[in-house]
Length: 626
Ligand code: BF8
Image (cartoon, rainbow, N blue to C red; front, side, top):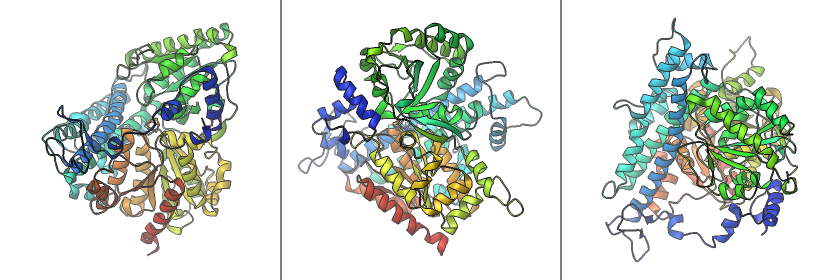
């Protein structure tokens, strides 16, 4: 196999060779095994919603058995992707809300950011004067949980948006109500014999996606910061070279920080550190993958092992004692790969049990004990490592991570003249955007997708943007790609245009800022919202874009849709499965402009995608330069 056509990550090349020698199958082998993908699936024009089908749309069979046309079929499939993504993000937030409800002064989970809790409590009209912080936390958690199923009213987080944006949502009748209700409404409306009107299907998708962005995800981030601390800038390293030759290597993979936070604590437990030494190891080395990796690097600087496409390769190093997972983006294939080495593949959530794994259920009520048990399993597995099977690739990059909104504002304060301007605002950022020193800002987010060369689109797009003075904020596996390729190191300002490089030097930041996990795209919404409010503009009038060069998950579809619904033009490097309906494509790429002031653009060539973004950002600057 020509590895260059599969991934641009050189560590991955080394490990793909090893996989071949070890006779282990990876995602890339399976990709090559699929000679051609199903055209109907790619176009979204296969209907499997009832048992009469599947009905596949062709020029000769333009309607399904019930009479649904291609627009209804494609639109229903798209809406269900949005519902699936919203469900995943929001269920994550629900678990964090339950964890906040369990928090106590002497329990497993404490409130780490009291100021953020008080601010949210005040926002939600919760009494804060003369109350115990845990009483406040529990009342906030209960209100948060009500956001999932309350019978009346709209999301409590909508008021964090600029008033102009709130009016757009009101006028379009897409203010999201309770999260579970929006998801259930899509599942009902796309049942056989319900909505058969593409405009309505897109309308439902917009409203449900907003319940992800402006409720579920926002809740996930805020409550995680309250419980685990709001991230601050810190140094880290990224790529599989962070694995250690003589330490117990534990990979934290998945999404919810309630587990990984406890594993971080357990790995520092003196009893377990001593046990590791007894077993002949020099210590315990935690490394993160996917969004759990982002959560723990943002808050603790835990090093990043890699991204979605490297999860099998981590085990193939032969140096991983345990791969610990919770929910989302976990390959079922890990069970088979782990079987070829000594690695324990430990699943922990009843929502993501995987055949062939070792299941150790993680219960928040017994969090620290569960975490210790899991870490102990890893340590005791160290003696089973077969040194002849170990190959840890050398490459790793350095970078600075941990840019919460508060951290970004904190960095901006370095350039505030305290005699003229107040500290603690986004004014310096707005000034850079209005003056043109920065031409714009881009949130580059999302996954790896085996339909393209892993990491190539991320890195090509990001490099082009920063070269053209567009500051990049990144989350998810896009952030991990940027970190692996050194773009989160402050020295990466050498790749930036003159304006961005100057800003990076003055404010002491890299040109690509790590804002966290995919749920933390809510941080991007918060920054854009703060800038829009400061400039007294709607979000759609700022030279700001969303980009998902290698997206693949349903969560990414929900994200893209709420980002557009928030007025931010969104650029995709992978065509979503909507090509089977010209009307759907027209609405998503043009029609949404009239409803929410933003649209999707798709181009699978990353150079062309970047060029379009740069030119569109320049066009958007008219609002500043008029
Ligand atoms: O939520 S970027 S592959 S890890 S879905 Fe998954 Fe995609 Fe990575 Fe996090 Ni987001």
